[in-house]
Length: 81
Image (cartoon, rainbow, N blue to C red):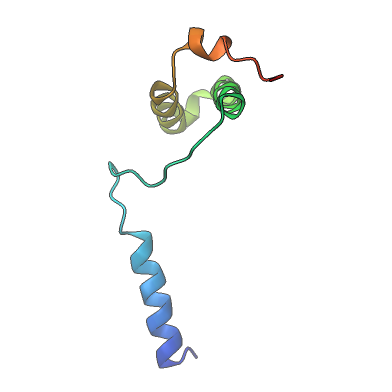
């Protein structure tokens, strides 16, 4: 059985999970150019590997990719620097 303090802490943790709305920014991430290129490439690889039954995930990945610089800008990044 969960004690009063443990129950209150569990409820507070659960409430924190619901503080961010579906259209609110949940996280900000500072990336170096090389890191940005790797993230962009990884998201494209993920998108290519997703099946037709994963349209909801495809949609979210496309939303994230749309927030990144265009393909030409990403290609211009030299990760060896």
